[in-house]
Image (tube, rainbow, N blue to C red; front, side, top):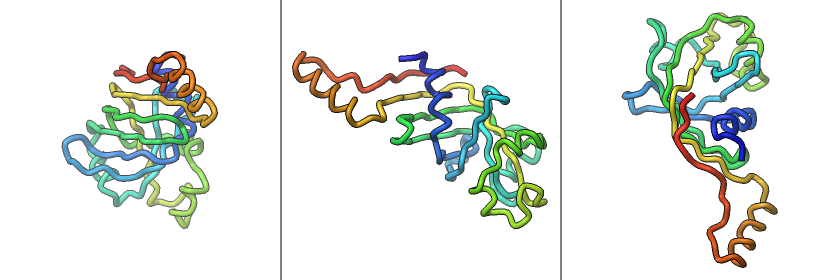
Length: 159
């Protein structure tokens, strides 16, 4: 398997929902993450200016937490990092989607649009197979060999 950090970034393209929050506040909210090769090491979220996350970042970056549990991407992670507001129009263009468009009447130019940038620092990451055939092959192989199946990789990743 590839390096766990590389595997994390490869699979983030297929993640549709992540839980995001300010560290220490104990409340995480479901958000749609966006990654783009033009902005390596960054995960983008679009929200409204009046949300708790947008308000929390008004005065500058905050320590944050992102949790991912995605069977379809085979990615499970609990990542600490920083969350900051961004005014980068190019990043907003790349992060914009039909999902975001449904929330804002004025589209990406709606004055209520707030772009947030999560910069991961360190986290526990697990990657698993997303293919049922491969999974059952691993189970069968393990049974024949008398060893545990290869269920993927897990470890601490420093971004």
